[in-house]
Image (cartoon, rainbow, N blue to C red; front, side):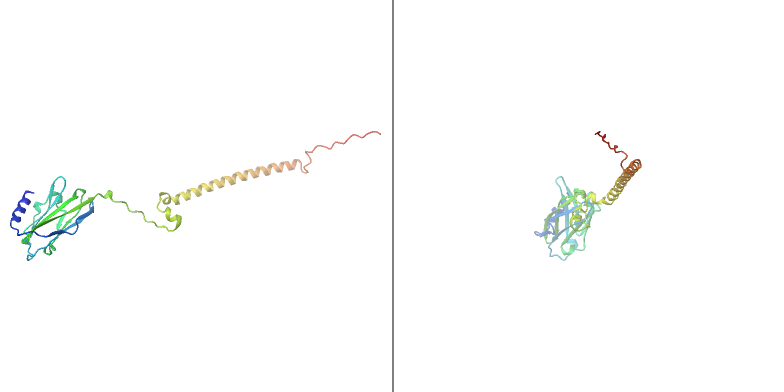
Amino acid sequence: MIRSILLLITLTSCVSGPLVVDVTQSSYQAEENHDVTLEWTFKTTTDGSFKSINIICEMFTDVRTFALFQLHEGVEAPESQHERFAGRVQFDKDVLREGRLRLHMSRLRTDDSGVYLCDVLTGDGEGSRKCHLNVTAERDRPKPETPNTTSGGRDASTAGSPSQAESPGWIVLYCGLGLIVVGTLLGVCCCLRRKYSMNHSQSTELDPMNHSLEPDPVVPPCRRR
């Protein structure tokens, strides 16, 4: 950090005036364990030599400042980078001559959220610009909705519910229970019908003319004249 400040003071004293520095996005949104590319642009009238370009990029949080990237006279200085960014920041050197600074950050962490500022110094002047990065945890990401594979009417409105997912098993169970109940009722009906037939046969044998149980007619006594 102290080395970066001294470098800024030294280079700023040799700069003739302000340099226009801008960002392609003022705010970035990314997810944990994903990648993001931060990009700055600056205007320069030099011959495009890397030796005339000096860049210092830092990350600011509410607690402290971390060195993200440093380019001294066109040469990257990885020793100035904070250990939390080691191996996770790559510099796109091909577009630097065009006045574009690209920093590719990989394997993002939630604590990478903060303000990122790059200070660019060239033979034309000095300028800086900041952007914001917000990294959210994977568990905060909303779950995608289950696609509806059915169509039309009630089937479409009930698709995807837990009861629908288990409907084949429940149908088999209900069918089995239904067969058991129907079989039981048929068995009971057969038993009752057989018992009724046996009782009816016995009563017919005892009184085939259905008169055996009737009382004898009463003959009135004859009157004497």
